[in-house]
Image (cartoon, rainbow, N blue to C red; front, top):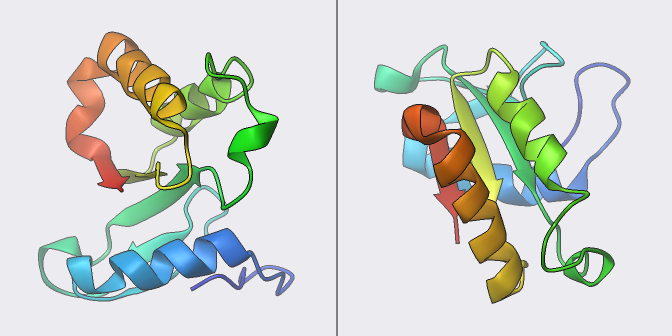
Length: 119
């Protein structure tokens, strides 16, 4: 789940989250498209694309509560042509999580159906 098809680089955070959500959507495989991390492999999610954003374990200490360096990445993910944005908030502080979700509600309310929250 975490090895990029192009170049074979392993991304631990993508591998971890991919393993968590794979069963939720009936199976995933890595996407050859650099815009997305995974593609659904069965059922109503077959062919649908998923892209991860979030903080891996230990990264919250490098971000302030207002997440000013993280929010542009959130916006960039919503502008991508992927079907679903997977937001991993497990390792955010409560204040960081609140900031990010408030931003999404304010800026991307019409796109929230594309959001998958990993808590």
